[in-house]
Image 1: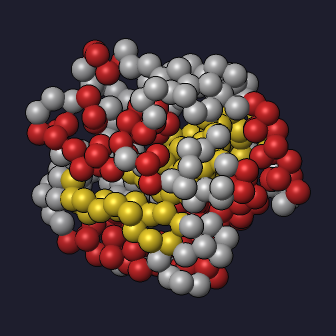
Image 2 (image 1 turned 90 degrees about the vertical axis):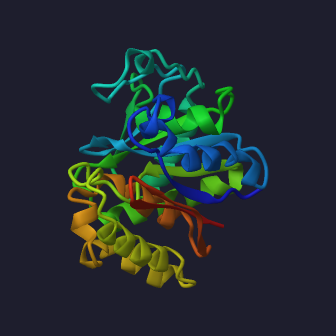
Length: 263
């Protein structure tokens, strides 16, 4: 069955394994992610994940058969560096996706050594704790051009009809300098704009708005650098003509956080 495309927040570092208020702040997100597979039309045969934590000069696909772990967060308790996510890779799917991207004129590369960064393993440990679904990872291109990444998603849309869930892992708010300041206005304002844009019934209008996201109210206050928003562009491009809907919303440290699904 045709799979949707979904944009999720992956929280903050190893947030689901932290004690005290810092961990409990993400309880709502954890509950949503734990029910994500049950919300799908059927269990996907593979998941293609675009992580905000992987940028390359060319769009690059992870081709390892047994990806390792990349602990790309710092200053957290020792036990959070012993997490393990032994899901299989999907090198054959990587080749198929690479062919679709090449047909769309997108220059690509393969990385047979790339492991799972925390934009992958943190949410997936909640989504599929048994690590049974093969994972294909996809990088951002490091110019972070939103229209280009919408085009990347559009090229990958056919995979949805082959049982592949396309998952964008980032955050609708990502400004670590203001995350703990208790101010809610900027995040709420940008979240309202983002929700309206992502849920436009016309895919053409939606994608045009997302391509110009930096002109939105409070855009740069919420994303001084846009790498955590770019996975949404890939997901929206892969949505094709499917309409979007907000499937998650919470306030974490007073900051509005939303997730979206298409199809």
